Image (cartoon, rainbow, N blue to C red; front, side, top):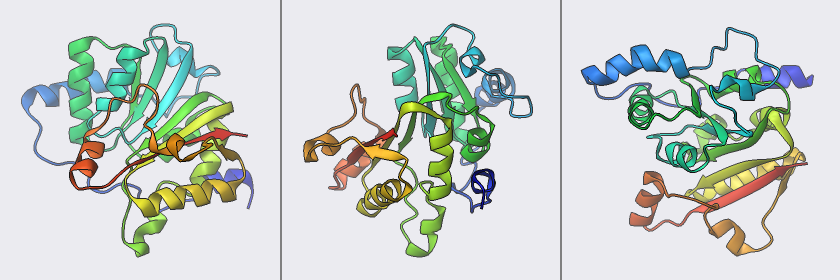
Length: 233
């Protein structure tokens, strides 16, 4: 199988339902007006420099896959105005929450994709992303569903292609089996180096970490989290 075939190989869905409670009128209006402004058009050819996707100059670009309610993405965008952020989230209600904050705060360094992240990854130019974040992804806890986990050799190929040399892949989870799964897959891939030097490195949240509701839920239920950082070789 060629590299291109590995990247485009179909997989099962990585996410569950697309919509929850009905949206309020203001949320519907934002989805109809603001979302098209922020959404990346995958039908067009990717620009040679993806920093040009943002209306203001940015120095680097980070990609967050599955941003949930958007708390982490918004915090990073606020505190790093010189960085462009691409957020991926197929769940309609979560996208609506993010759009409300973007509108209220006038954030201009966020672009979004509201469908499968693999579509965006295959569209992005090679060596165009400085950092990829996969934070508290759906663990698909039943063993028969593990093949739906986003971390796979196919998707690590995608990460490796779009990350710049020395770019980072950051993963956080409170599910031990998924943490071990990610360590094993990244080790087997060969294109990523785990940066941890001791246990404190992967038990300590990332620099500037604001916390997330998923992390808070894990703590309430007595689970600790792991924060893994891998560098592209």
